[in-house]
Length: 133
Image (cartoon, rainbow, N blue to C red):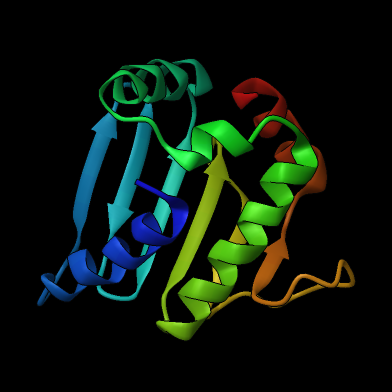
């Protein structure tokens, strides 16, 4: 499964939601999915890493092969932002309750040259990426 497939699956899942939202809890981490928006609040990166390792055993992904450094992650964020914007969807990533990155339709791009990506808190983003890599 590749990144493009994952991003394409998100709008399909969201189309199933007529009203309200779906909340998924993994340890101290929450993912809330509504019709036009996904909010991922990561409080325990360690639990996300455990989940990713468990999933990785069942399938080999080009994401796990290509993401090794922060520039790799930033490139992926840009690609995901573009795909989400085309679908008029938004992904908000929070770290311990604070907005870190907004990708897709509702993003207000800054000076980094990444369309459809708004980095709200650079320091928290680096902390999150360091914890996940």
